[in-house]
Image (tube, rainbow, N blue to C red):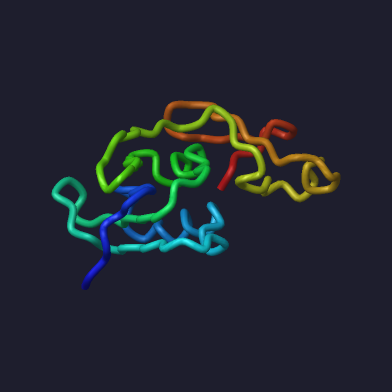
Length: 136
């Protein structure tokens, strides 16, 4: 397998095995015209296996979305083929239009308003701002 190195872009590392496609979809990476590589089930010394996403362009990344799906992931910023920054992620306090409220009677499912979820504990529980239903 041959995956080129990144000149300018990002390497999202330590994604739990099997979650890279969810990150890819929710960040709409399919709409990019640059190279995007997804490596699944790579060997990991700490967790056995992990997924990795390489993006060969410096774009606006929603790190809150990445942290929601993979809170232990790291994001390496690459410029001129050199890592210039390594970002550790933490769970965002609020998610807006990332997940949908599972309560069919919630106002956000019946009106044209944002789906907003608030982090309610350190375990990563998110609840709807409007009806307080727990996210799935």
